[in-house]
Amino acid sequence: MPNTDDALINAILANNKLMAINDCPGVPAQMSRAVYGKTQDDSGSGTVIENNKDMQKNINIAIGFPGANSETAVWHFLMGPTVHHFVVIPWYQHTIPQGWVYTVFMAYENEYSVEKYVKHTAPAPSAAKGYKKIWTTNDLSKMFSDLLTSDTAWQEYFGPAGKPKAKTIKYWKYKVIPLNTAINNVNNYR
Image (cartoon, one colour):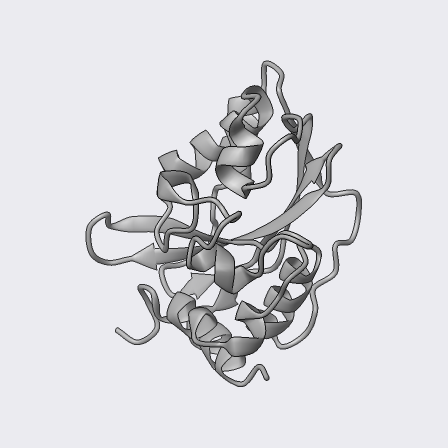
């Protein structure tokens, strides 16, 4: 099935321009331009997740994908008050683990590019909390919870040490797009 599974992720991984992004705000700008054919707008103030009684409910809402199995999107996440941007791309996996899975892409200004993140090149994170093609719903939920509650999560998920835990995670979910269109757009992004 050319329009499902990891074809979009493979197209992103094969795109030298996307792998060369070396600053965190460039990730949502260029990934959205590549996937949609034009940069998406972070209109409005975004939706905020904080460490409070509604944290888990708000995380569940943030990672819920309303699209069909043949659709995808780009979601822009922004950590605060220490700023860090990254994107999450939801896609449907037909093999185990079957269902909605996610891929996280990031870069860290003056530290590592998207390619170095993908290849676990220090100081990019490695092991289970670094790049992996498939993040399950539980993996992504734990990441967001950890970032808001753990003093060590920043280093574990983002790499550079000495940063405080996040107080907020703000996000923008860009429109749902057919997977075939997204793949074609990424393949033509130069």
